[in-house]
Amino acid sequence: MLFRSLFSSTASPLSRTSLDLPGGSLISFYIAQNSRAEDALRANPQNTPTRRPQVFFADAMANADRFDHLQTTRPSAEEVQFAWEDQTGGGDRDFNDARLSLCLAQGPVYQVPGGATQQVPVEFTLVDRNAAFRNELGVVRVDDAQGRIDGLLPGAAGYAAAALQKDRWQPVFATTASRGVRTDRKSTRLNSSHSS
Image 1 (spheres, rainbow, N blue to C red):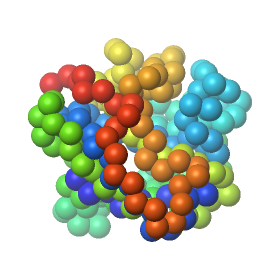
Image 2: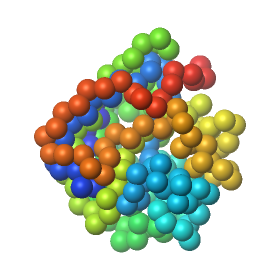
Image 3: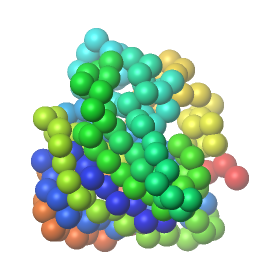
Image 4: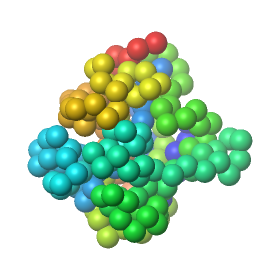
């Protein structure tokens, strides 16, 4: 899988990260509003819409404000583009705060190719940014195609806390990513346990 990210944070365009993910694992995406995911969890553990910062997920039901913070388009049969809105309730609804393109897309939940014992490289490139917030963008391991985490469906009480528990999430671009820096690394948070 090749991901191209037009991510908005203090990260500069053309930063690249290659992240080795467990083969066969199911992943989805999140954006942490003006924060790192771990700081958002600490400051707003229930991910309530009246507190800041919030974490928004690819599935609108997982978002405390129930707003769909992600728009998708299909410019071709091989590509899906994701555009994020990082403001609570949809804010300015410009959906230009972070953008990803994914080749060989499968839906809002993606299965990393390969077997459970393999680490599969996935490359992310930061191309542009256009947000006032210093957002973090990352992946979260889910248990099935509906986005369940430990039996919780998106929108269930405690979903955000379950999604951001140890070994479930991995930042792709942190709020401090730098222009043109390339890092290759194994996932330090996502373990290889997953449902088949």
